[in-house]
Structures are given as structure tokens and as C-alpha cells.
Length: 146
Image (cartoon, one colour):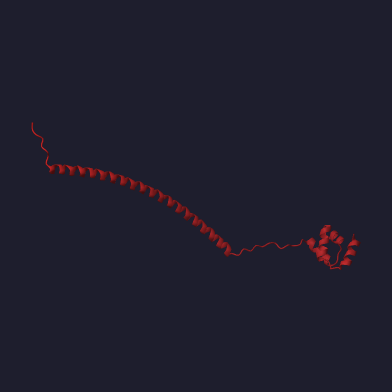
């Protein structure tokens, strides 16, 4: 039986180096593949966030454009003076006649009969436009008329 000879030490070192290099290469390959997958996932996440940011930016641009239009319309409104004309109170012909009669000294009954005013309207026209009478004389005339 032949005796087992021990391989030379140099051969063992050479085989050890080869195994170590293969193991290191496999380990580096696994690490690189995982790193590459992580980078791809991060890139997809960044692209998704980028899309969301672009959509929000487009919405903000639309809002700014709408606000600019509104502001320019308000500026045009402010720039153009608006003449709000409220109709001046115009007395109807019946009131105008009653005012003339009251200024000439007509009584309440005359205003009611000739102008078609109610009693309170005739009294108001007479007080506002009638000749100014002293307080004592007016009381006597009001008592006489009643």
C-alpha cells in the first residue's frame, strides 16, 4: 500500500487562495446585486415623488394664473371710477302742487281736496313747506280746524 503523502505546503496555500478568491468574488457579487436593487428602489421612489411635485407645481401655477387674472380685473375696477347714480327723489306733480299751495298758506283740508293727499301727508307738507306760524297761533288754528 502506498503511503499517503502530504501535499506540499505550497500546494495547500495555492488551493486556500483559490477558495478564498472564489468566496470573496461570490460575496462581492451578492453585495453588488443587493446594492443595485436598493438603488433602483430609491430611484423609483424619487421619480414618484418628482411626479407628485410636478403635479403640485402645475396646480400652483394654475392658481397663480387665476389669481393674477382676478387681481388684474380688480385693478381695472379700481382704475375706472364707478359712477353710482341714485335717482334724486323727485316729487310727483301732486306733491309739487301741494308744496306750492302750502307755501301760499293753504290749509290741510285744501291740500287733501285739491291734491288727493291723505290727512297725515297734508299735515306733513303743511309743516314742512307752510308759512312759519308762531306756536300760539298754530295751536289756535289747529284747534279751530279740528
